[in-house]
Image (tube, rainbow, N blue to C red; front, side, top):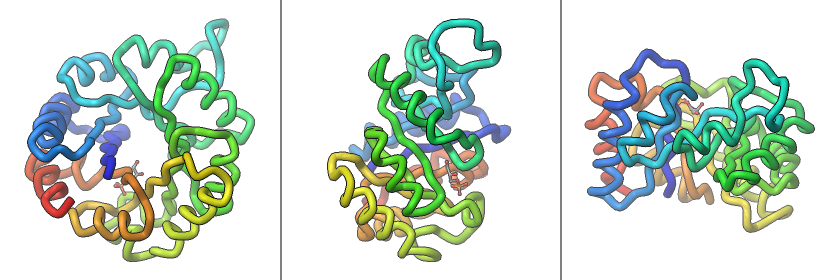
Length: 214
Ligand SMILES: O=C[C@H](O)COP(=O)(O)O
């Protein structure tokens, strides 16, 4: 299972979490990546942890003030990027362009969507992975894998019916190793997780506990 820790805009210490994630990944053999604010990508990447951007813009070089170029995050050390996170929605056309922008510089792409129908639509754009996240469960205590298992298994079915090479992740409310196992049993090959680590009093312990059953 792949575990992607999205730090969102939480007031956490990105280096503390990056160092902990690197150590826990090395000790456990579980693939763990950290997705910090764009301005923190370089120093997070310097810790040695796998580093992802939270977003890339749907444009190339040019007069695009305020954009986050795929080239810029790749040059800063990111090796992957989220696209269309529930808190950073894009049009389908911009998702397509952003996936192509990320692919230009060999970033792994994970396109998020709210439900299995949207998952099918974004799978057709050929990202490396998709992630289903019901917005109502994001940031809560109930794991998507137990509170809404059908949305995960239907997303897996939707993706597999279009392109079996696209990995399916899920996220929202995941905080324990058992949640990760439940997601895997539904067919997911990775999870997106934010508050369970970024808002934890002890992020290292939260990560250590998370990987125990994996
Ligand atoms: O990107 C992460 C997801 O939105 C899940 O967030 P959460 O773990 O706080 O529910």
